[in-house]
Amino acid sequence: MIKIPFNLPNNKRTKLTRKPNKASWYVYKFPILLAAAFYKSAGGVGYSILIYMLWKNSMNNPSDWISLPNNFFKVEFNIDRQRKSEAVYRLERDGLIECVREIGKPTLIKLIPGVNKNAKNKQG
Picture (cartoon, rainbow, N blue to C red):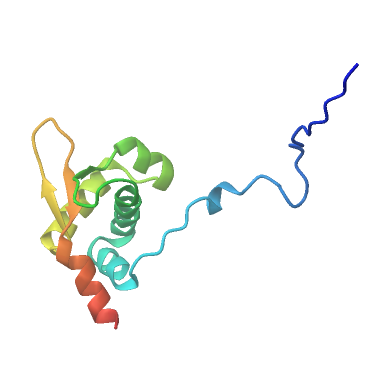
């Protein structure tokens, strides 16, 4: 009999290779002044919308329109659709986002291109 040596991977979890914490899976850095502007305009809901928009833009094209799903905001942030809608109106009124509203379709939003650059310029 011929013996062929090969190594099987050892997938046991140890103290050094323990399962990561779900809360630390995603960390995103964004301009503080932009976050402050969203928070000042629409409170904590505005801040949550900014986090979601930056997360979606990091995966997709930043110039694409984004819809804000009711189920995601209810489960992750415990935000109702009415509070989300009020925050979108406030953010649009203050010139932080653009909106497209159609009857029977979700509201589409995107960051106004100059807002992020202006926040960076004011920091430095």
